[in-house]
Length: 197
Image (tube, rainbow, N blue to C red):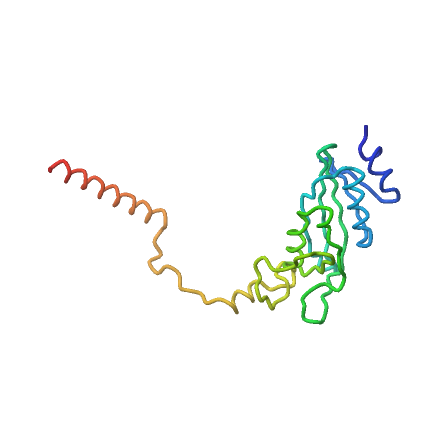
Protein backbone atom coordinates (compact mmCIF):
# COMPACT_ATOMS: atom_id res chain seq x y z
CA UNK A 1 0.00 0.00 0.00
CA UNK A 2 1.29 3.45 -0.90
CA UNK A 3 0.04 5.97 1.65
CA UNK A 4 0.39 8.88 -0.73
CA UNK A 5 -1.49 7.17 -3.58
CA UNK A 6 -4.10 5.35 -1.49
CA UNK A 7 -4.81 8.00 1.16
CA UNK A 8 -3.37 11.47 0.56
CA UNK A 9 -4.07 12.03 -3.15
CA UNK A 10 -7.70 10.79 -2.96
CA UNK A 11 -8.32 12.94 0.15
CA UNK A 12 -6.68 16.06 -1.31
CA UNK A 13 -7.25 15.97 -5.08
CA UNK A 14 -5.77 18.89 -6.95
CA UNK A 15 -2.96 19.51 -4.46
CA UNK A 16 0.66 19.01 -5.40
CA UNK A 17 1.88 16.46 -2.84
CA UNK A 18 5.55 15.49 -2.80
CA UNK A 19 7.53 13.06 -0.67
CA UNK A 20 11.12 13.70 0.36
CA UNK A 21 13.97 11.20 0.90
CA UNK A 22 12.89 10.64 4.52
CA UNK A 23 9.32 9.77 3.54
CA UNK A 24 7.79 13.06 4.72
CA UNK A 25 4.83 14.13 2.57
CA UNK A 26 4.73 17.86 1.77
CA UNK A 27 1.73 19.97 0.78
CA UNK A 28 1.79 23.71 0.04
CA UNK A 29 -1.57 25.36 0.64
CA UNK A 30 -3.31 28.74 0.77
CA UNK A 31 -4.34 30.25 4.13
CA UNK A 32 -8.04 29.82 3.30
CA UNK A 33 -7.59 26.03 3.08
CA UNK A 34 -5.82 25.53 6.42
CA UNK A 35 -8.85 24.52 8.50
CA UNK A 36 -10.16 22.20 5.78
CA UNK A 37 -6.79 20.46 5.33
CA UNK A 38 -6.18 20.19 9.08
CA UNK A 39 -9.70 18.88 9.79
CA UNK A 40 -9.48 16.24 7.09
CA UNK A 41 -6.03 15.11 8.24
CA UNK A 42 -7.36 14.74 11.77
CA UNK A 43 -10.86 13.37 11.16
CA UNK A 44 -10.49 11.33 7.97
CA UNK A 45 -6.86 10.19 8.00
CA UNK A 46 -6.36 9.87 11.80
CA UNK A 47 -3.42 12.25 12.17
CA UNK A 48 -3.60 12.35 15.95
CA UNK A 49 -0.62 14.58 16.61
CA UNK A 50 0.32 18.13 15.69
CA UNK A 51 4.08 17.90 16.18
CA UNK A 52 4.91 21.59 15.75
CA UNK A 53 4.11 24.86 14.05
CA UNK A 54 7.19 26.81 13.00
CA UNK A 55 7.86 29.98 11.06
CA UNK A 56 10.56 31.17 8.64
CA UNK A 57 10.86 34.86 7.76
CA UNK A 58 11.58 35.28 4.04
CA UNK A 59 12.10 39.03 4.34
CA UNK A 60 13.55 39.34 0.82
CA UNK A 61 10.35 37.91 -0.67
CA UNK A 62 7.95 39.66 1.72
CA UNK A 63 6.33 36.67 3.41
CA UNK A 64 6.41 34.44 6.47
CA UNK A 65 6.35 30.71 5.77
CA UNK A 66 4.31 28.80 8.35
CA UNK A 67 5.08 25.10 8.64
CA UNK A 68 2.76 22.58 10.28
CA UNK A 69 3.98 19.05 10.97
CA UNK A 70 1.32 16.38 11.56
CA UNK A 71 1.92 12.76 12.53
CA UNK A 72 -0.26 9.64 12.33
CA UNK A 73 0.57 6.85 14.78
CA UNK A 74 -1.81 4.52 12.97
CA UNK A 75 -0.02 4.87 9.63
CA UNK A 76 3.42 5.94 10.94
CA UNK A 77 3.34 8.84 8.47
CA UNK A 78 4.33 12.51 8.66
CA UNK A 79 2.70 15.29 6.67
CA UNK A 80 4.38 18.69 6.38
CA UNK A 81 1.92 21.47 5.43
CA UNK A 82 3.26 24.91 4.57
CA UNK A 83 1.62 28.20 3.70
CA UNK A 84 2.86 31.69 3.01
CA UNK A 85 1.55 34.68 4.95
CA UNK A 86 2.33 38.27 3.93
CA UNK A 87 4.70 39.66 6.58
CA UNK A 88 3.29 43.20 6.44
CA UNK A 89 2.33 44.52 9.88
CA UNK A 90 -0.76 46.56 10.76
CA UNK A 91 -0.18 50.28 11.25
CA UNK A 92 -2.29 50.37 14.44
CA UNK A 93 0.71 49.82 16.74
CA UNK A 94 -0.27 46.22 17.52
CA UNK A 95 2.83 44.73 15.82
CA UNK A 96 0.63 42.02 14.25
CA UNK A 97 0.36 40.93 10.63
CA UNK A 98 -2.40 42.34 8.44
CA UNK A 99 -3.27 38.82 7.25
CA UNK A 100 -4.52 36.31 9.79
CA UNK A 101 -4.40 32.56 10.28
CA UNK A 102 -7.18 30.54 11.93
CA UNK A 103 -6.37 28.75 15.17
CA UNK A 104 -6.14 24.94 15.13
CA UNK A 105 -6.52 24.54 18.89
CA UNK A 106 -10.08 23.20 18.56
CA UNK A 107 -8.67 20.32 16.51
CA UNK A 108 -5.33 19.89 18.32
CA UNK A 109 -5.18 21.51 21.80
CA UNK A 110 -1.37 21.64 21.62
CA UNK A 111 -1.71 24.27 18.87
CA UNK A 112 -2.43 26.74 21.68
CA UNK A 113 1.21 27.18 22.67
CA UNK A 114 2.60 27.06 19.13
CA UNK A 115 0.18 29.79 18.03
CA UNK A 116 0.99 31.94 21.05
CA UNK A 117 4.65 31.73 20.08
CA UNK A 118 3.86 32.74 16.47
CA UNK A 119 1.79 35.65 17.78
CA UNK A 120 4.44 36.82 20.24
CA UNK A 121 7.70 36.18 18.39
CA UNK A 122 6.69 36.75 14.75
CA UNK A 123 3.62 38.97 15.11
CA UNK A 124 1.32 36.51 13.33
CA UNK A 125 -2.35 37.42 13.81
CA UNK A 126 -4.36 34.37 14.92
CA UNK A 127 -8.17 34.27 14.94
CA UNK A 128 -10.23 31.94 17.12
CA UNK A 129 -7.53 31.48 19.76
CA UNK A 130 -8.82 31.66 23.34
CA UNK A 131 -5.76 33.03 25.16
CA UNK A 132 -3.29 34.99 23.03
CA UNK A 133 -0.91 36.42 25.58
CA UNK A 134 2.82 36.74 26.06
CA UNK A 135 5.10 33.95 27.16
CA UNK A 136 8.12 36.21 27.75
CA UNK A 137 7.76 39.68 26.22
CA UNK A 138 5.73 41.56 28.79
CA UNK A 139 5.03 45.16 27.66
CA UNK A 140 7.12 44.62 24.52
CA UNK A 141 7.22 47.77 22.35
CA UNK A 142 9.58 46.65 19.58
CA UNK A 143 8.72 44.69 16.44
CA UNK A 144 8.48 40.95 17.16
CA UNK A 145 12.02 39.75 17.94
CA UNK A 146 12.17 36.67 15.69
CA UNK A 147 11.46 38.69 12.55
CA UNK A 148 14.62 39.29 10.55
CA UNK A 149 14.23 43.07 10.50
CA UNK A 150 14.53 43.16 14.30
CA UNK A 151 18.02 44.50 15.08
CA UNK A 152 19.18 42.38 18.03
CA UNK A 153 22.54 44.14 18.44
CA UNK A 154 20.94 47.58 18.43
CA UNK A 155 18.35 46.42 20.98
CA UNK A 156 21.04 45.01 23.30
CA UNK A 157 23.26 48.10 23.02
CA UNK A 158 20.34 50.42 23.81
CA UNK A 159 18.76 48.30 26.56
CA UNK A 160 21.60 46.93 28.67
CA UNK A 161 24.67 48.25 30.46
CA UNK A 162 27.83 46.28 29.96
CA UNK A 163 30.08 45.52 32.89
CA UNK A 164 33.80 45.38 32.33
CA UNK A 165 35.42 42.00 31.76
CA UNK A 166 37.84 40.23 34.05
CA UNK A 167 40.78 42.47 34.63
CA UNK A 168 43.17 39.72 35.68
CA UNK A 169 42.78 37.95 32.30
CA UNK A 170 43.68 34.67 33.95
CA UNK A 171 43.16 31.45 32.05
CA UNK A 172 40.01 29.79 33.40
CA UNK A 173 41.40 26.23 33.22
CA UNK A 174 44.54 27.26 35.10
CA UNK A 175 42.53 29.08 37.75
CA UNK A 176 40.15 26.13 38.27
CA UNK A 177 43.13 23.79 38.69
CA UNK A 178 44.62 26.16 41.29
CA UNK A 179 41.34 26.28 43.24
CA UNK A 180 41.00 22.46 43.19
CA UNK A 181 44.55 22.04 44.44
CA UNK A 182 43.95 24.57 47.21
CA UNK A 183 40.82 22.70 48.33
CA UNK A 184 42.65 19.37 48.26
CA UNK A 185 45.40 20.89 50.38
CA UNK A 186 42.83 22.11 52.96
CA UNK A 187 41.32 18.61 53.14
CA UNK A 188 44.78 17.09 53.68
CA UNK A 189 45.60 19.62 56.43
CA UNK A 190 42.27 18.88 58.13
CA UNK A 191 43.01 15.14 58.11
CA UNK A 192 46.46 15.74 59.61
CA UNK A 193 44.98 17.85 62.43
CA UNK A 194 42.43 15.11 63.25
CA UNK A 195 45.18 12.47 63.40
CA UNK A 196 47.18 14.57 65.86
CA UNK A 197 44.21 14.76 68.22
